[in-house]
Amino acid sequence: MKVDLLPAAGSQVYARVRAKQHQAAIRLWIPDYFDAHSNASAFAWNDGKSSTVAGLNGWQIPELNKATLAAVAEPDPAKRLGLYKTMQETLLQHSPYVFIDQGKTQIVVRDNVKGYQQGLNADMVWYDNVTK
Image 1 (cartoon, rainbow, N blue to C red):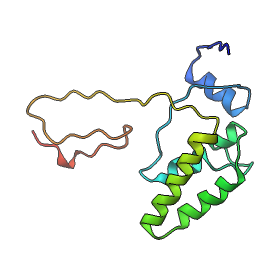
Image 2 (cartoon, rainbow, N blue to C red):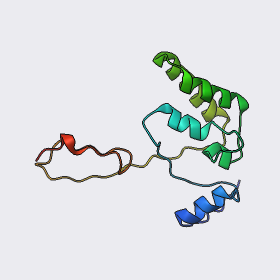
Image 3 (cartoon, one colour):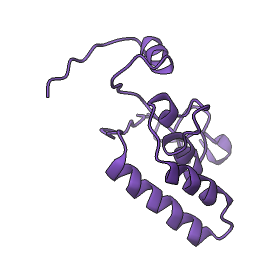
Image 4 (cartoon, rainbow, N blue to C red):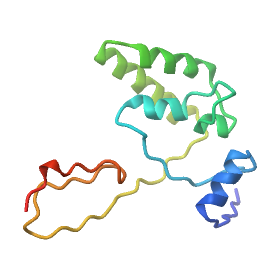
């Protein structure tokens, strides 16, 4: 297999993906919120109308749509976790996605600054535990 990588600005990549003019794309992903449904609704859910990751890539397993709805509605935490775990395993085995890396934000603070924790993105920083 030969792959030609075409470097582009993020805006160009996302425009091509949204227009479904791509064969493959290397993209960044972070969940919108800390819950398994943020990933499931993006990677497993494709109702043919939504602009989820699955939808933008024209990929669908109807059983995963049903599983996504069942998992988000499951009130028992252990059962819910099991449903999402099964969905994750199905995605890893049968989806077109290749997860190649995970970003890491480097943060530098002075020695006398304590309690700072950086979340996944700039919106996920809580300063109430920071002391100096």
